[in-house]
Image (cartoon, rainbow, N blue to C red):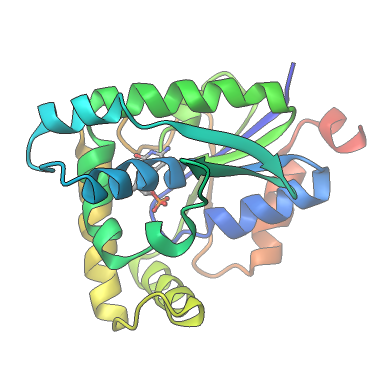
Length: 225
Ligand code: DC
């Protein structure tokens, strides 16, 4: 049976950096579940799906084929043999992803893909519903959060560094809060802190401090092995 470290939280709380480092230290594969919802959104936009129509999103979702491969410490995704790259990190995808992610057929499909990843071994999985819906039974569950200001500043810096966008921190904050609002109020598997998950507020912590907090809370035998 695989060991699963599950990390949920709102946009920009630092889930990706923390998951990547924890994965590296333990030799666990990093799984970015948000990227799967971003791919579904990207493909919907490419194929001209009406994102105001839940039925159209649901029908299209069934046709998307995402290939998952373990690669250099993480699970990489391919659509039609191509890696999506930064095409799934644009402001347009940011603005539309939560509309696609709230639809049940999309969630069911992504959840099945994620559950199937245990075949690859031990995992660090980050997202919004990993601790509540995808792997609710794992003993290592975390809710990583931070103030809206801290999250917006981090995201904006990331976007500028990667050359994806050049938005102000205010614009990034507005987009992030709009997404969080939909993600936490949707009907199916909304973002919330799971009972028993360890909440970590990273606003005033360094990345290393957050990583240490996670590592210390893991079952002792996972560290030793
Ligand atoms: O983490 P992210 O910003 O890449 O996520 C993209 C979108 O997918 C965002 O609207 C939240 C949603 N998501 C989700 O509903 N469930 C997950 N497990 C991961 C992401």
